[in-house]
Image (tube, rainbow over all chains, first blue to last red; front, top):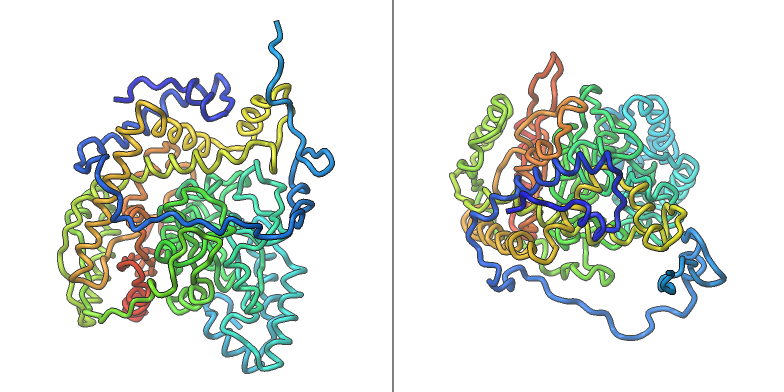
Length: 99
Length: 473
C-alpha cells in the first residue's frame, strides 16, 4: 500500500529540512519501516469500533486562573532563544507577498 | 560498604544505625563514578556539589530521627525527567543547554524524603531506541561486556545501578525502555500500571505509552522507589485515582505462558534460560499454564504505528522558538525546518517522518486508526487471561545484548522489542527480574525474566518477582 512514499512532502509537513544525502537513505528506510508494520492490515478490529474499553476520558481543569499573572514569565523567557521585553521574539509570520 | 552488592534496604539499615553517614555514602558513589564512568559513560552530568549538600540535609533528618525510606539514598535520574534549574536534554542536541523550569512530580516526591540525586543519565534520544546508541552524546557501555550495548532507552540509569554507580534510578518505559536495559544489565526494572505514576515533568515521547518507573538491584529496591513516587496527580490528565491501583486480589499462584508467541526468533540459550526460570517457579509451587494471546502477533506493528504517530505530534514542540537549539534563517518556516534538522538525530527524524505518514490524510484510516483498533484487541486479550491467572511470563528480549553497531538497520532493532511492547499497548504493569546468564565470547551476560500483571497488579509482580529472585540466588 505504501510502496510510493513522497519523503520530501512528508518532510515539509513535519517541518524538517532533509539533505539530499539523507533523502537517499530515507527513501529506502521509511518504506522498509512501513512494510514492517504492514501486517496490521491482516488483523481484525474495525476502525469504527467504540474505544470505550480503553477507559480513557477527557480531564479538564477548572476554567480559572491557576496562578497569579507573570509568576513564571521570567523563568520561561530565560529558555527562549530570543526575547523582546516580556515576549518571545520570532520572525515575521505573515509577510507581504514579494514580486 | 561494598557498592557492588549494596541495596537500598541495607543502606537504609546502616544509615539509621549510624554505621556511616549519608555524606560518606554519597562520596563513595561519587568516587565510584569518577573511577568507572570514564569507561561506562552512564552519566551525562554528575551533580557532585548538590549531591553532597542533599546528603548533609539527609544526615540532619536522620540525626533528628525523622528518616524516611529513601532519606540519604543516592540515585540516578534519566535525562528526560525534569529537575528545576538543571539541564534536561533527553540526550538530544536540540535540548543540549535546556534548563528545566520546574520539578517533575516524581522529583518533588523524592525531594520530600530528602533523597540524593547523583546526576542525570544517558538514554536514546527522546526515548527512541533499544540500545542507547541513539544518544547524541555517545552510547553507554554494558558493564558486563563493554563491547556490547546496555539496552535502551534507559541504558544510562540501568548501567549506573548495575556498575555500582547509583543505588537506584528513575527511568521511563514507552515500549520496554526500563525492562529491556534492566534485563541486559542484570538489574530489576519496574514499568508500573499506566497512570499509576505521574508523567508531569517527564518529556513526552508517546503519551499513551510513556510511564515513569524504577530501577534497583532487587525487587525490594524497585518497590520502595515505586511506593515513593506513585499516586494521583492533578497535573497529569491520565493519572489514575489512588483507589484504582493496588488492588488486593487473592493470589492464585498461577502464571500463564503464551507459548505460541515464543516460537519465532528466540536465541536457543535465551529460551532455555526462560524455561529454567519457569521450572524453578513450578518447583516453588506455582502452576504454569499455557495461555493464548492471539492479538500479540500484531503488537510490534501496532506499536511502530502508534509510537511514531504520537512522537511526531509531541516533538512538534521543538521548533527553535520557545526553547532549545535554534538555527538562524530568513523566514520562520526555515527557522523551524533548520532547527529541527540540526537538533534531531537520525532515528528521531525517522520516527517523525513515519508518524507524519501514518497520520496523514489518506493513510490515517489504514494505519493509525487501524492500529488503535487492534490495540483494543490486545487490551482485551490481556483482560481475558487475567481472569484466571496472576501473571503472564515472557522473556524480556529474544536475543542477548548485541555488539555496538550490529543493529544499524532500524527494522532489525524494532524487532528486538517484541516481548516488551505489548505491555505498554495494554497499559498493564510489568517487571524485569534478573534470572541466569548466557555466554557470549566467554563473557556471562545477564538474562531478564519478565512478569506482567493486570492493571494495578504491582503487588503480584513484587511477590512472584521475589520468588524468582530466591530461586536464582
